[in-house]
Length: 373
Length: 251
Image (cartoon, rainbow over all chains, first blue to last red):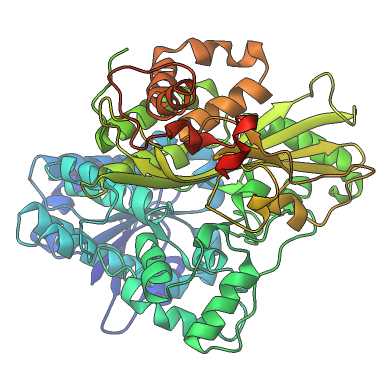
């Protein structure tokens, strides 16, 4: 995979990120400054050499530093992204993943949220140092994924190949949505798959939610062995190289028809789930996840998006801003402890208005569990 | 009223319309469980029976109601869970509409001094048991308390809670049990608009037709002939007994 990274910073500064993301034989990143003029950028994008890139990384603010020719580029990375999407819609250039990489302060101050759909991924430069390996995997996944989507759109591969699964048991609303997007530009489909299928749980779930639903303490030694048993249900479709996910319908099928446990997974307390798995799979280092003293149920189903502890939805407070969710998407909740003493305000801002009274009452009930002033 | 053709699409489409109008009412925290049930019904194989489960639908209620014990409750949540399965209705052939039914209504309240909890459990009688031969077990009945409350390991003050009486009540599906919660726990001013919505009323009427018509017709047949209808068994009202106190000899 070859990516181009356009940033107004000097090569010396850009070198650090390039070195962090590069992976021998798998990902190479070329660094360049913006060209200084809009026309020159259009020429660049239409060039033969640009067509060789599998992906593009853009800085948001390109007008802070002059380039090698001492020219300042008076346009934003988001404007370039829009132009590329326009050019690819007109079939003048081929679609490719575009990633926004910018300092947090710039994103907060200058990034218009309506431009989010232009980008497949938005990365904050301040924290990229902690996530190089993950980001590299995601960049590679995006490169491969666009090719896969294009192939499906041209009927070179089937929908089964696109998603890596048998279609029949899938949520029909989700399948209908994908089929409706088949004629749309590739990046629209890519956006949909990444933002509404892979990163919003429901049909696919991530490892912490999987551990929660199986009632397992994710730190227990036996967890790895369980995950191994679940290989057949691991997502291997588009973008799977960068995001580890499991098919929820597959997990339910495994519980009912392979383990053949009495009783619906949803209603069993964690201990009962872990008991069943320990016996049937003959795993002994498996411990059950435990609930907070403020929670009522240990039939865990999700994780608090703030503190990541497993919770049952009845013990959770619904987070605000989810009214536009697709019907197959799981809703996000926070735990009571997180509501009383927020630890991660980045991930959630407010509880849904329908839950605000409950939170107020909880604050009165537990006045000592509040954040220190 | 005419009998409507009954199949999985009927059921699913009423559930879907019901979920849509419920979502607009903002009486539930999360309605997506109902949409999921409706969607999965479309994928059921063509068959003579249907079934579904919907768990932990939360209805938050601010404030309290007069007559609440204790009085200092500021907020409570009604949590509804249901597992139900039954048959499609065939015109003029009335029989017990359901094969399985379990409903749990959990009430979790917050006061200034702690959390309070109680539950109601609705059951379909599962045939003869040791206990059944001693205490009245109507085919469909409510119990106060039940396994959830027992298992919660809380103090219940000076209250004694017995699994009896098992109060007879007509069978319910998801739509009727949501309607039950709304009519019993949500104040009139908060539910008025929802209950006037035609989609809501159509869904409730359809469910009552499928589940309540055979139940009530069967009971009524004890005293009145119900013409043009067969009940599948000769003494059909006994499906819902022992409600009628002088038929003790039956059991």
